[in-house]
Length: 224
Ligand SMILES: Cc1cc2nc3c(=O)[nH]c(=O)nc-3n(C[C@H](O)[C@H](O)[C@H](O)COP(=O)(O)O)c2cc1C
Image (cartoon, rainbow, N blue to C red; front, side, top):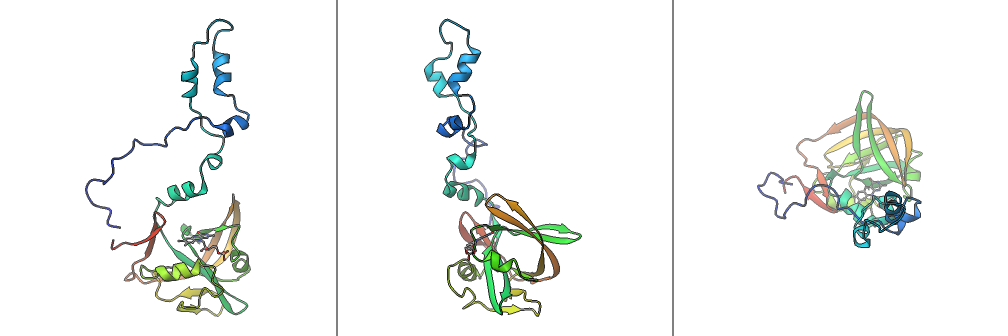
């Protein structure tokens, strides 16, 4: 991401989301329709001061954005925020189990806490949740394929992944940019995800190894 260049290629749209017309969803939510509000604010008799044409341009925030925006649109907007990519993994019944997660963020320095958001539909999180220790590896720029594999439906996601496991069961990806040895401290429900707060017991990094960057639904590196 060499983002220090001069002018953006596309003309910038004026700030803020484009207002959307009141749709069926807004009316279902029980709020007053444009017609209702026009009638209430108008005189008890005589001509309606607001024409139908004007009424059709009245805008209102929809009841919920997820009701009127597809998950594809939501993902696209969220993916405007560049992130790193982590591998969250542990030994389960002696075998490495894990997944790729870009929702990782640092939370607290004292105590040392980090968090990851886990999809409630994930088949892997319920397996990891019971682990005493989990490894979080911050994937390196050259580990795009590792990320793909750790997010695939493959039976053995670690088949071609170079990893090491600690005696406590945390699993780390070799060659990553950084590693955090964690246990689960708290789980907070948040919509269709859980926010997992991890206590960090040990950590290390290799500053010479550039991280993998996930942005606009694609993989990037800080080198460009
Ligand atoms: C770049 C990337 C980031 C991801 N981030 C998350 C995440 O933060 N949380 C999550 O639950 N799943 C995330 N996933 C999806 C998981 O890696 C995995 O594909 C998903 O959990 C489905 O597999 P499962 O049912 O075995 O868990 C991400 C996938 C990719 C490719």
